[in-house]
Image (tube, rainbow, N blue to C red):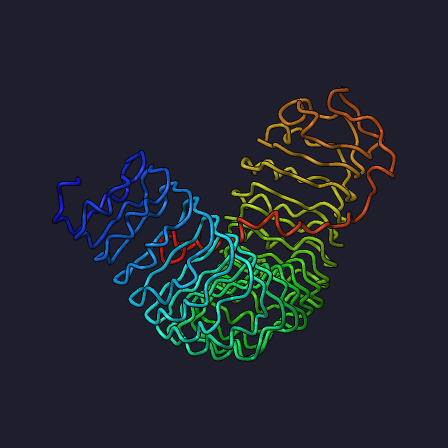
Length: 504
């Protein structure tokens, strides 16, 4: 290709090319305006000669398994408008004058590498920048100053780094009136969310501040962001009431507020008519479950676990037939019976009301939930026999009925289910243990704490003292944040595919 001296566009994206980028490429193709080699199997480093392509406007080397540092000459390509290095193994620092040297740049992606050091403040000099991706690296220090001068900015992705700053820098972004995506999750940001959050772009669709060290209450002015579709504030220390103005988000699909210290929910949650996933688990929320949640007719997943909710389970949410992924009310103070309306959840895969104070019998209507794979009812006061109707749940993989007051024989049909885990411990069951199916695997079942059960020694564990398996509510230990680092860092990318979010 060294003979193609008049070549202007070289686009080889999405193939299986291997080997190194030719070292003399930048000297051989002096008229090149676009070099697109992304999504190949290229290795090695970026040759410094690319810095000699003075006419270059677009450079994409995304997902090529490249290593090493960015050659200094690339920051001198004054005509560059599109620069993409995402998804490689590049390291080192970003050139400090990057923004000053590239005045025509509108797209900049360094995401998914191993860059270190600080993000240069010179970014604000690239006044035409529309999309910035510095996510999934090891950047340290403060957020770049004067980002508010990027009046054309639409996407800002700094998620999963080690940036330390006060979240008050948000005030500088109120001038970015075109901002649609704002991601700074999984950093070391501190402070309280300023009232100026109300003045962010009305076009803002996705905002994630999750996995930082933010405190205080959420300003009621956040309700001005009427076009939000995703709001992710989980894994912080937010406290107080969830503001009533959150009910103004009529376009909101995902609301993640779990792992904070919120104390009260607003009834306006029922106004979120487009809501698909709601996660409020692991807070300090008190009171009854808002009846208005029954208005969220598109909800697929609901998590209110690990709070201090009391009262009965509202029939309004039991009738949300849209819920198909998960329904989790575990570790609360809920009382009363499990409503027979649970049969409305016909497409539900995971149902968990464990570790409450529910009583009465297990409703036969559960047998209508033919899609159930996981059923957790442990740690309550359910009584009576295990209903024969559960035999219809042929897709069930996990069944936990332990620590209740269930009586009668262990139904033989349980051995006919495709169970991988079964826990019947600490009930008042009696008789012989079935021998088929899951009962053949001693490591998959638990039937301790019942003196009147007998059967093959391979599946009936020896007596355990109450000190090793205490009846009652088991204390919950919250997962450490780093264990969810990559999951949180990519949650938006999984839901909204494409370079617009992922940035390579």
